[in-house]
Image (cartoon, rainbow, N blue to C red; front, side, top):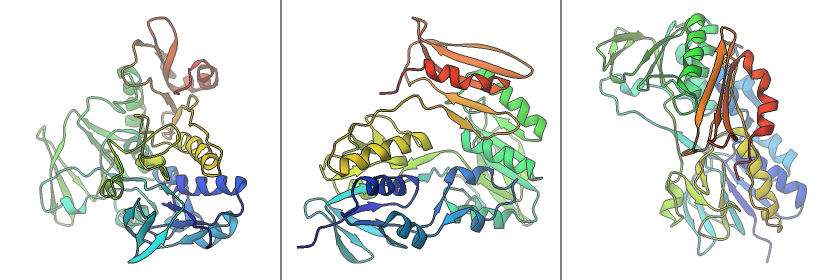
Length: 382
């Protein structure tokens, strides 16, 4: 009987990195990657700062599926929709056919959160979560001038900066009273807001978009505070929701994401999950560095040498050239307080435990030069 393959569902950074790292350790076991789209490889973080560089979707594609398959020495199946997982029989239903596996890796990614908007223009609100989304957004914005962004988080601010540099008039709406509410203390957020406003971004904070209506070829946004904004294109960037439905219907446990232990193992011993879809011992970390750490650890475990995942300190660079920023937020519920100092050139905020231990930081502007020194002081996440 031929050896059943390791099957990876998902062709993003998580899926391809697991495959690449696994191949370094095991050159014999067959690997099948199931991609629901074209299966090509590209840098997802590039999507939020490609307008100013005049990058088309085609130019962002680094390698197509055929090149990736040859390079990593795996089988990549494009446009493969997995409709069910049978953990007992260790097989999948893919495009109406059965696919067995020896081990299964769920690298499913996440879906954009959709706001419950009213109005006949609600269906025209776009989001950018993959290369095809980016292509649609570029086509919609081509030749236009006014763009409204729902959400002043990490992705919303990155897109806002990129779009104003590309020559667009940009309005950003958010329920929170400040930018990057989950990552920054108020003083740091205010500094970033001032720099983005100097670049041309207009913010509408502490309010929500209630209705989007079509008006003469444009979209009219009615805000809860009574304001109205006229835009050519509306982009939603209010967050991501881990893709867990496929797992849940198979009896795989999920909470915020697919629940896995330190070995990235689900409640079924031969099924693993990582990346944006996974909740690793209570954490959902949809960033590049955690994905790379997880992929390396999982590759070893899949090859027969179990390696628990340990996260080092992993600061996140915010791609807002108008206000360079690096953030390493404290763990949720961490005991301590922010201490902030700054001037016109930058803001340094450190989050310290009551015993003086550094637990997080946020560096704006010139203060980003202290990233390396402060990162060395941070404890590992696990």
